[in-house]
Structure formats: structure tokens, C-alpha cells
Picture 1 (spheres, rainbow over the protein chains, first blue to last red):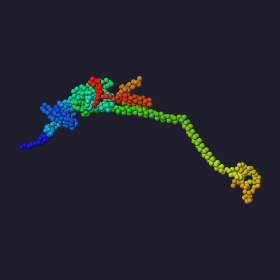
Picture 2 (picture 1 turned 30 degrees about the vertical axis):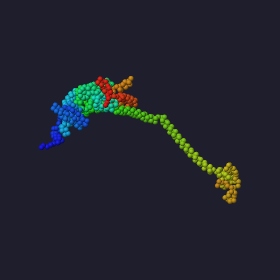
Picture 3 (picture 1 turned 120 degrees about the horizontal axis):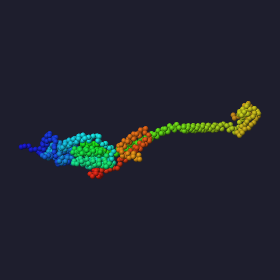
Picture 4 (picture 1 turned 45 degrees about the vertical axis):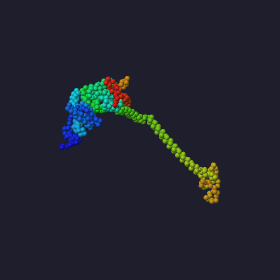
Length: 419
Length: 80
């Protein structure tokens, strides 16, 4: 009796066989895409077929994110896929898991690209001498790209954010597939043909990223020639940073992306305003500085001159004289005041000492012929003229009998001195 | 007459970039102490004219994005 295996065991065994096959783990498959489904999870499920059969395939979103698929895959595309064959145990079926998918025939296009590039280069179409300068301050921007998609949005948004007063003129072009090249050429020509007042100052031609086929219009000779012939400066902005197309070489400027093209083409209005303002400030500043400096010079000359002028000297001396006079006067006045004060004090003192004040109540003051006070009887002889002063006047008299009390103790007590 | 002509020249024959270059040179010159006051006034006036002309060249009116139709006519482009 042979062993009985479960379905799971069989599938697991087969899966293991596949896993151990080195070739199946890393293999290239060529075929035509059919039943292609982009799942909402980000994974892609499709079938590759040729005349002889079909192969179920899947591509995980992680592989797509890693750059494994650079174009929108669709029914009928001829592709070459790199990946591994593995077994899906749940259904017992095998599948091809693609890590990278490129279009079959891309090699051919690459060859074409290189050939045209060297041809145009030989014709001098990439020469610096033919590049038009990109004006810094533009009024109108021409754009040749698809009217839908991120490229036109990015260009409009960034341009208008930088300069809200910019006029953008869009030529809605077909940028991939049938008729793309003539459409781009028509766009460039139509914008160039606009009358002077409406003509753009710069034209951006471009589109978002894609496969080499998607970008192919920008590798066509007729587009390259239209770019070269255009007398308006053209910025080529095709795909991502890593994509390079022929128009990048022919254009007057290459931008890595449509957004970058807008940044290169459009000036920042706010910065422009600031620049103008700084110029106004610089002008006014220079003017003010100049006038202030001159005014200062005039002032200092004025000072020197007025110092040297004779009137000034006279005025100065007059001032000094006037000041001296005032000083003198005030000194004099204080001196007089002080003296008068002193005099008052002395007068008051004198008044107290005045002998006349004492000549009250019968006392008198006797002076001799010589006007001196008679203080002793010894100085008087009988018959001498004497003057007796009283409070209200004086009496002239002659001395009679003279008695000396110090000699005769009992004598009249008449006194004639102030004692 | 001569002044009218000068004004015309100001807005027609030069670009904003050239005007700004001239402004810079003019300001540098004004800083030279050897420049007379009269000259300074002239430079100042010229500078202010240049600033005004630069300003006037950019008409500050917001515009709609225009789209060219196949027949060459224009229509407003509605952004998404």
C-alpha cells in the first residue's frame, strides 16, 4: 500500500521544488500583457501570453514603489518582466512574480535616441551660442503641455505663487502617443505667432514622468527643430530629474521637473518689491546723507566765519564790558549796603554814649576856654571863662571863688565833672 | 520734448533687469563724496523715475490662466 498525502503536503512539496530551482528564482520572461488589473491594494495582477500559452503574473506594490514599473501597463503591451516563479499553495497554481517590467523594444528606442542625439549635436543644435538668455522679470509665460495632470497644475500653482500677476497662456498639447510630436510643435509655433502684446516671454514645454515611450515626443526631430527655431526662450521640463530627452539639450534651459521649470521661469514678486524698496531706501539714504553732510559743512563754516567777523568781536567785548559793569555795580552796592549797616550800628552806639543824653536832672557839662572838659578845680582860676552845657543849651560864665574839697573836707558838694 | 523722449526710452528700450542695474550704479555713484549736490539731485530723480518705471511695468492685476483654442482664440483655463 502506497502512502497517502494530504493536498497541503503535495502543494507544499511542489512549492519547495520550485523554490529549489535556481533558475526559476531569477528569470526574464517576454510576452504580451492581458487581463491587466491594478488592484486597489496597489498590486497588479495580469497575464503574459504568447502564441503558445499564458502565464499568470503578479507584481507587488512594493516592487512598483521601488521603481520596477515606470509606465502604465495595459492590455496588449509587449513587455519583458524580471522575477521569480512560485507556487500559490491555496490554489495549487504557480505564478510569476514580477520585480521589474520594461517594455519590449525599449532597447530599440534607446538606439534611436542616441542616433538622433549625436546627429543633432553634430548639427550644432545644442551649442551654447544659440541659447537665448532667460529673462528674469517676465509678464507672460507660455506653457505647452497636457491640460490635465500634475504638470500643468504644478506649473500654474508655483508660477502664480511666485508672481500672482503673471499671465499664463496654456497651449493644451497631446504629450504622449499618436500625434504628440506635431501637437507640441504646433504649440510652440502658435505661442510664437501671438501678437507682440500677447506673446509669452518664456515658454515651458514639458510633461510629467513616464516611460521612454511616454516621453518620446520630446525625442522627435521635428520637436527638437521647433524648439531650436523658436525665438522665445524655451525651458524643457520633461519627466523626472533622471529623465533626459532631446529637447533638454536643444532648449535654452533644462529644468529637472515641470515644477522646477516654473521656479526658473517666474520671478518672485515679493522679492522684486523688496528689491525696489531697498533701492528707494538707498536713494533716499544717499540723498539725505549728502544734504546732511553739506549742511554740516555749511554750519561749521558758518561758525568759523561768525567767530572771525568784527561785529562779533565788538559784540563780544561789549558783552564783557556790560558784564563787568554789572559786576562792579553789584559789588559797589553790596559794599555801600554793608557800610550803611555798619554806620547804623555805630550811630545807635554813639547815640547811647552821647553826653547830652546825660545832661538831665540838673547835671551839666563844664568846659574851659580851650573847649576841654573841666575835670578838676585845680585847672581853673578865678575869673576864667567857663561854659556850662545843659540838656537844652549852654551858659557862658566866669569862675568866682574856687574851693578845693580834697584839701578842705567840709565844702559844698557841688560837682562839675562827669566823674 | 527732450524729457518726454527720455521717459519713453525709460519704459521701452530697456528691461527691468537693465533698470535695476542702472539703479545700482546710480546709488554707488551717489555715495561718491566727489559728486556735487546738483548731480546728486539729478541722480536721485533719475533713480526714482527708474523705480517708478519698474513698478509700472508690472501691472498688479491678477489674471486668469488662458488656454489657446485650436482656432487660435483664447478661453479661461479652469484649474482643477
